[in-house]
Length: 250
Image (cartoon, rainbow, N blue to C red; front, side, top):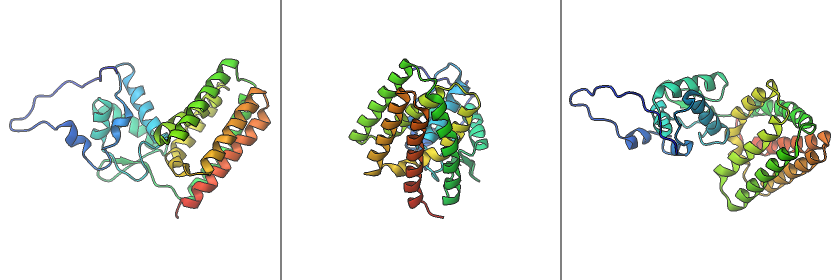
């Protein structure tokens, strides 16, 4: 693991005791932040943003659970400055909300907002999948198949966090095949808003059915059949959305 970048130390005031790492992470909501991983020296600002973005998409930052900027900075091994800047961007993308006390949290979801996001995902991600069929190289197909094998194994082992992270990577490899600087930011924005709620979709038999749709889409992409691949991805988005909607209130 690369050494974390630390800000220059300021002189301590007399009688003031330094805060321990444990006391910083001990605040409400901060205890699970070690999963973020330490940021390295290279392109620190971009890395902090990418780590936090991934944490939101894969549910590491739970909806409605406030975390402190200092806690995030400590977990990433950096100063609060790049964390604050990354959170500013994520707030603009509606991925997090700033609380009155200065902490941040992933916003709770309403049924109306989730339904709106699902409708948009069906259009955007279905279209991206259909386009991807014409751009999938043998190497990309092998990578997607490898990621699906990992996702399936993680499903069998019950490792929810890793399952969600690998599932997101698998989908994004498909979408990134079209090399569209217009579509990908839209898809990332949608996942930033719905990703934290995919934890709700981990029940059986829904999850096994969802994986069968992914496999059917991958097989269609191997054949270059964009409309067929789109059908299976849209079915997964739709049925997963139905299941999550049944659990949401308001």
